[in-house]
Length: 360
Image 1 (cartoon, one colour):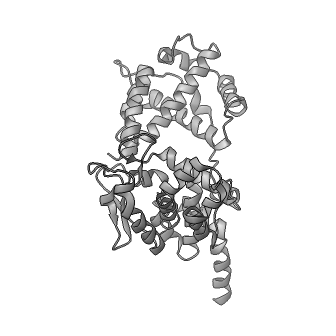
Image 2: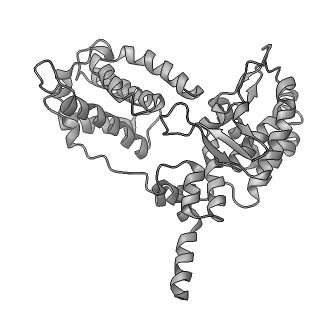
Image 3: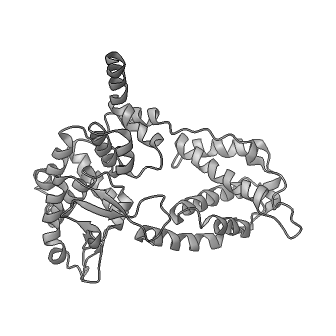
């Protein structure tokens, strides 16, 4: 099991103990088909819903674990509408339409299982009435809409190389009066530039970068072996190619990985961090990489830029030179529907379609 999945499985096992028995049963049912990361999100959604039920007096349970099937059975439609309003208007951490849709989908999955699949000792459904069957969850994440939101918020053309160069050299000028920040920068600039370069030249997800081990790297063939999202085969790694620039940056980083980060030989992670006061380096975390990219992006003048937008930046650039199927494979998408984002971002398919029609 890859590093992130191991961490999420541990968190899942811990959190599910504080859930009602029927949620634990549902999670066990789903474990063979869904990743621990996805199921952890499910459980977090149920935590929020059960807490809301208790706060609204719709459950008499002292804890989330005490919410009963009978209390779920007698929920009215107005209760679900109220929960939807709560998700969209609560003062702290208001959810986007996409997030609300996902949270309601999590509930639909649980209620469907309880009413259609799970059964008691007399072979009757655990849940006799399923209020969530009445709730329509519309698909919000349309490729065209996502593309519209991304325009102006990703790196384009020469900016891909300029951002890596900024991390490598020019960030220094912006922090030269801050000794602490300058020290941290000098320590990590090659590593940080290498991570940005790798994503901008391969399209890897941040979780895939975190999970990389040294043995996954094949510099000669400009290739990595990656645990891809959605692939539940624990031992299978997908070969993913990267561009020449990333090879140069990887070689520079690899030359200093062991000594600069005091990396013990037992540590297999490709990207290493050496926390203040630590005697030896350890695998970088997802959160550390995300914070690192945001730090550089703000100074670079792209405050909207995130790790995932680096992936979008690569994908848009890659799609301009390749077709939608090659782009899908490179990014590890489950279907071309997701990859359509980049068609809308570049308008390439429409312009080429017009030219082909004209020539025929």
